[in-house]
Image 1: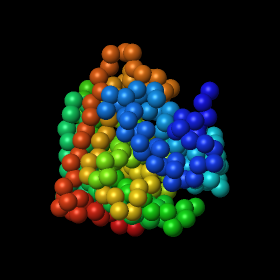
Image 2 (image 1 turned 60 degrees about the vertical axis):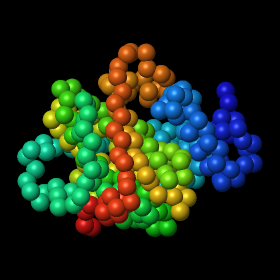
Image 3 (image 1 turned 90 degrees about the horizontal axis):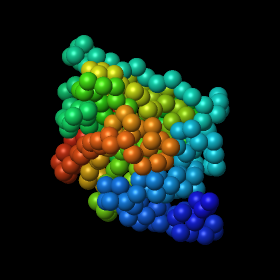
Length: 264
């Protein structure tokens, strides 16, 4: 089997900048939305995450970049936050009331981007165990299952941040071990959402160059049969459909969304 460095076309002595350049180039070339193989795309993503130390949920390797939880293994199961009935939430009880938002509707979900904040110190999201020097771009969503079937929210794996440099930056699992410490209502893990229920979700982007701004955010929702297959790294053979939710971020809109949608 190819080593992680071989997947990226690099030698084991390659530095982090070389790894990032190779990852961005290959991600763009093999992204399924560009006609690439999903299996190869996931293999490239896995190789990058292992090398830089940002592990997908469930992986056991933690070689430096993922933030370890002193209370237990970063791969141990963690409870998810509750979903809620959006019609029962009173005015002022929502974390996004009174702020400008962007909403994209589809057959499966209605997604609302309530905030997109660049250079967020992760210490502003979780109180413990996180070095304050780590800054990332963070998206905050309201996810409403408007279909008649249960849908699986997979924010980290299925969200792409498209920069003005033309590269795609995937979601990061860097605070997954600390998802229970996120501010009230906000969820940073995978969740199954029943029909009519909603979820307030956080997606943290992988590291971007400091001069890059996000121009688009793309979330890909697979039908139920696709989720189990994609989790194993395979291509779907079930015939289930895929729905994509694209947020276009013009400069003025991006500026208005650049604020945390909660108070700590």
